[in-house]
Amino acid sequence: MNRHEPEPSAAEAVARLDALAIRFGAVVEDIERVVVGQTEVVEQVIITLLAGGHALLVGLPGLAKTRLVNTVGTALGMDTKRVQFTPDLVPSDILGAEVLETGADGSRMFRFIEGPVFAQLLMADEINRASPRTQSALLEAMQERQVTAAGAARSLPRPFHVLATQNPIEQDGTYPLPEAQLDRFLLQINVGFPSEADERRMLMMTTGAEDAVAKKVLTPDELMETQKLLTHMPLSEDVMTGILRVVRRLRPQETDVPLIWGPGPRAGQALIGAARARAFLKGRSAPILDDVAALLAPVLRHRMALDYGARADGLSVETVIAEAAERL
Image 1 (spheres, one colour):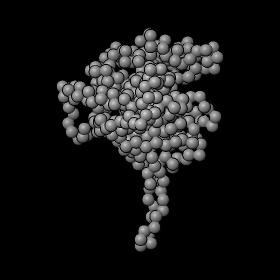
Image 2 (cartoon, one colour; image 1 turned 135 degrees about the vertical axis):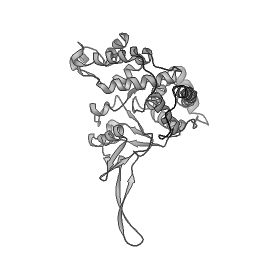
Image 3 (cartoon, helix red, strand yellow; image 1 turned 30 degrees about the vertical axis):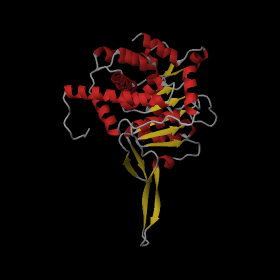
Image 4 (cartoon, one colour; image 1 turned 120 degrees about the horizontal axis):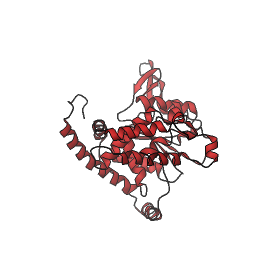
């Protein structure tokens, strides 16, 4: 949708969203044909993109995280790039750098060479293996959709999304992501093992002569159009009240749960955007409390932390969030 075009009427917006919902249903089907046994993960990744955000994929190696990102990029027609984060990675490896070039006439001038962050979909693989200085290079990109490199602010392509991965077990040589950066991720998506039936199907599919490949289903422009239309999706007072209640209840000063820190206002914004996206995928014209409850864990699990005593007693963030979901 061209930004200079007039805003569509309510009826036109609903009709267009209905048509796009069918297209996105085809996107999900195509991705699930290639990435087997991760239905909930696929849905949450698409929700992240529809809500205009970034996602942190947490799971053990070998669970198709890289395959998932590449497949999503292909299905949505997005320019996709991948960066393997390592301790020796420096910010210019991500953002780009100036190089001195000599022209045919002997003149010399600097030319900026764009780094991999100049993509529509960036996969930051094992993001917690890079130093805090390098991790911080992504903060401006994720929040402002621009980077400052070689003394100039440079706009990133539109759309721009980061799907980062993290290994939850192997912590040697890693740098935990600071709270400020974690808060930039709309969802933390936990990637688990597939069921036995799905794993059997995956083994058969990936060890034969031919492997399933994704095809382009939508365009980045259609993704951005859907993102814009979803911001106009109505939000009932019950849903708004439920989101406010649960977010405020999970802050240290508002609960008896021994929390070190809890979700800020950005968590409420994330819940609204994600709930609208989930309602859209489910074929509804507005989100309901069930959408909020289904998304509480991926939206909040990286935005709150228990103190040491609570963790020693066996309490987990997931348990606290599950109890909050029951009281929605």
